[in-house]
Length: 578
Image (cartoon, rainbow, N blue to C red):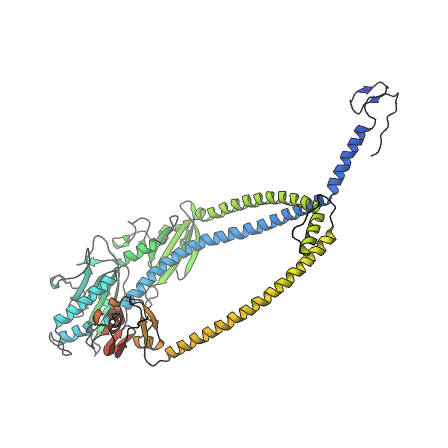
């Protein structure tokens, strides 16, 4: 350390006391204060120039720069994703609601065609033309009417949304021949003295004008009984198909009424509490509205329409929503609202007849999640950045101080000695550390290579075994699918386990999981062509489930996939394991 000398006999300021000297010798050791100041300056210079400080500054700078860039990109991507997710929720809810309506209408169309092909329809026509007696089979008109009533009752039991099933004659004023309607507790047959004349109703007239096999869908309105709207109001959609004789003359109209209000209630359940739902017909009339008084108000006189609800967006949304789906942001009641519109054509014969499902949500509600996520991101990034800066600074100091200790430890580990004594202090030896870790890496690489070879061998064995199993399974399936007879396997509970391709061809389509008591009605199994249904306990497969062996039972099959009907021969066996 350099020495600082004082000249005696001259006035000055004592470095120790800070007072004016009178020229006498000072009692403080000469040069100690100046040496201390130089020592502090030298220590500061060494600290600023040390490796740990430079590494710390470098790491912190890189870390902050990367964190800011990553945070910006992450925040931008996350906010875009959150906004898209919130909009997707709105779109998904509306699409699910529209699909619910489409599925209900599709099922309704299929059901009316299925019922129109049941034997009692033709039996009633023949009996009425034969003066009350069916020349085919000798059944009376009352017997055929009773059979159709029973089919209607069973169908209404399985379809809670259907509240009326009717066969209406084309003769005279259109008297109802059979009518089953849903009562307070269960479906019931309408007595003969309560049947109505429906020939003047628009849906009967329009359905009667269709060619054979066509399906008619009415507009959605409120049900009327004896010329007046039924109270409480019953939102209704009617599907009908004409019934013709062999010569093409019109015999009657088969009509199903669905309680579309139940379907619309299910659509409303798809809405989130923050969302508002509207359902609109092709004329812009509200079928669903937040105010129940507005829904179906058009049935009683002039009422608000879709364009009235969104006046600022009427030029884009139009009086009736168009095809497809649309996101629109409009000003409504002083607040920005996001509106999603999706439409479905419910009648292929009349594409203009559409149902539109509209979901709305305040824009502030959608973007609130984005703001919360942004604040959360900033807080987390800031906290992590502060923690990382501290960790980097500490690690930089520890790493530079411990280079030699780590190099010695690396040498010991590379030599196979895991219990090492770390020196208390010393300078770093980066070269030795790198060589030691290199040797360690080489050793690990050799072991990993051996392990990789073993893994490859195991994978090859697994792949070979998988291929063998796949070939065996494909062979079994090929044999089963090429058997000339249909094969069906069910468990003891009546659940289908296996159908081969021939069985699906015979039945006329893919099988469905239905309970054994519904097999006869679902697949259309009858004892003969006149439509005598097979009782559940007499079905060959049910008998086999009970443990019986059944040989060569002949059944008549008719269902929507095999409308013309066909005779089949059934043999069943119980499969008993040990």
